[in-house]
Image (cartoon, rainbow, N blue to C red; front, side, top):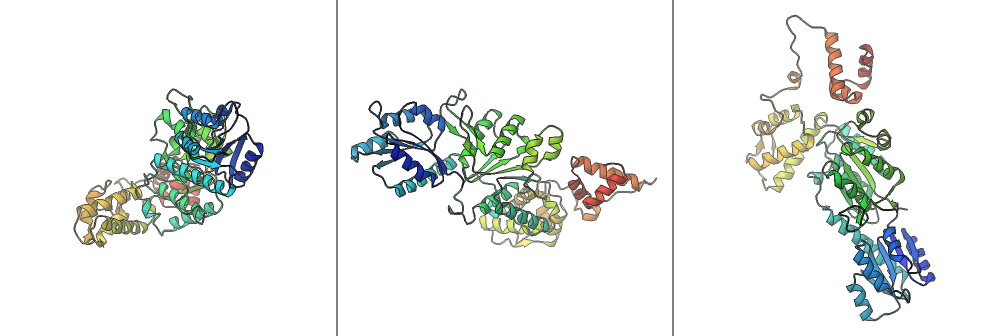
Length: 466
């Protein structure tokens, strides 16, 4: 059972805290309790709970109200629920003014405690998501993973296997713009399918490892405790904690610093995280999805990426093909975006593409992949009023277009020189170029040359390139 949250219970009656602990542990919470005020504030802060259940009449030396005020002054991130035998309105109002989130009168109903605890945990997570701008979603996630090619069907088949296995860590590779975040969000939605919390309830956090400043990324990922460094004025949960039992996407993991890679390895292997300056290992319940457009195997061999982390991540991996290798999916995706943007910008008169426009899209290399195609279609819909999008509308918006329309046969044509050439040397040179361009990734090199992996291996052995 995944841990739903961390509870610290404080009451001078050991029977009450043990009963409370037993009930909440049965609901999937990790519970720690204390019956005396000795070192209480230090213990609560160091244990880093989500919720503190605190007895008002704790002892003759110190009251629960004093402890509550001290915790709020320390800037603790936990919510505090007060417990008391005094059912007066004055006591309840005082607790709320001091910052308590809830107030229970003894003897309390355990079923009510369970419900309120669940609601508080859910509110904590929703607030954390809003604070982290959860709505900054991938620009074309609403379209899902569109495609019917064999490669996309195979990707979705493998993805479903990983969902069924409840894989805790998944690696997604592919060129920039090929839809890695879209696939990650697809996995997130499938992981929630049929879950008791319902679709969309578990959080999704996406972190671009290249976008965060070097001096902030560690704190963002792992969190920190008050005083861990100069500007750490309060405790802060890291994204691994905020993601709870949802999904955490680490985008462009290939650019992460080596020292952080070591810490990430510990997190994915032990499924715990420790805040900067902290002394407690907190459980990680989130599915961790990492993406990259780099060849991590080559980077690991060259020392730019930790080999142990690469082997750990590659256990469950999915490789998205570039758009140019997805055949008629190009037109399927283009038509999908055309319908979407025609509706969005109220251009109901735009119906489709001409045959020449479709041929141009099929023959183009799409260096920016699905992202480039999406932007191209949006631009055409906004700027044009024609019922049919033609080649003349398409070509000027293709960033990599080099003038006249190429064809599959002429684009790769080699002009035979007057003096002739060695076909064997040409073949050897093309294989060498393909290997250099793909950083010795033989699967990608074979794909680039339009031959099978086995044929490439045979040719490499033949030309002593293996």
